[in-house]
Length: 464
Image 1 (spheres, rainbow, N blue to C red):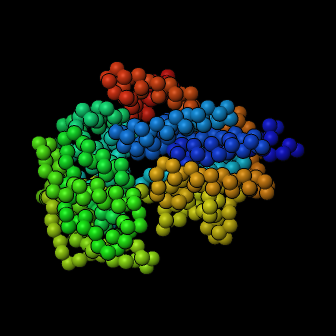
Image 2 (cartoon, rainbow, N blue to C red):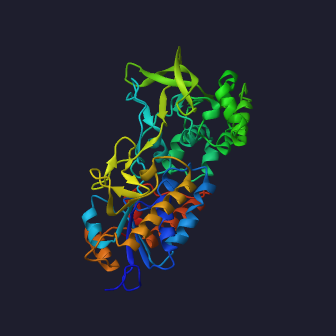
Image 3 (cartoon, rainbow, N blue to C red):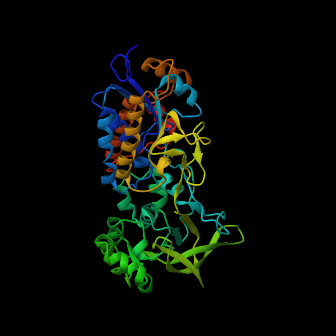
């Protein structure tokens, strides 16, 4: 019998998801020069790249250029992409067990965390993830409606997603046209009446999760001014100690302090960055839509490990807002047949090996990487070492003989199954055609890209 990982018997790996973690895993698998490995990547959308396409802000085109790296990985002759194929609907874990030696789940974190306050479900209260997916042209969210006739909007959270949402709300139509924002979002935002955007952080300026380039960018917007309250960027002892020990953090606080007392200077919009405040209630009008937000003022106290934690005081304030976006974290969702840790909202795993929920022993042949492995943390590049850790354990398991024993471990058998279950699947060659069409359609309008935002339109363009 041929040895696994040879030309006669390639190691066959299925990857569910096509975001950064998935591609970095494929890259490291292909770097195993002493093994012949075939990778089939599955995504329920026709388009690859996960949150690089559907989550990175449209005005951050440089960040999106990382897809050139993924393109190179996909050019490996032993790589195949099966887009428009949904795990759990078109293909199952039993299918994979009969076709592959290993299965890697890198499907990200598609849901959001809630604030858990009264009024959270009022009209005009949304998850920031919904708004991000809408303006990025995600097919599941393209038909959402956001009431941009409101003059004041609150974005709860101070991570990069929150600051992206706030910035997009403050951009001019001309600025947005230079991005790859979805056409429907460009049209809606071009008619926006929003004039004030609140960005709300429960801890202090030194604890804000957004990066220095993100906060610096706020001061460079064409028609919006960032404003900070002096008392909310003043550093307490805990924050001062953190700033002294971290030059980048010191720079971040310095940028924020430069926004204290800024005037409109003839600009139309104001982005008010608030710190040490938490929403405790959303208050609606007679039609059931958000009209006001109740905030509690916080102070910082030392946690068990010395970290700064927010503690509520007995001081409250009200702000008038007609639209709210919560950005307090992404949340992973369970997939059929994959053990899930509800508390952490991740696949139950140890260093990428999926575990049996009863015995806590690794389940043969099942692995995970990315946000669904470790939780929604880090930037795009954080997924690379994460995926390398998982693949290192996958290779170790191959060497010890701990793999699935598929009955039909051939490329032809996998294609035959997909053709039977989802004849309108999209290959990577098909994606390249869509990519070229989007770029050409954008160029005709003087834009970098004009995204397809409807699956049927994508398939029609491909003649499927």
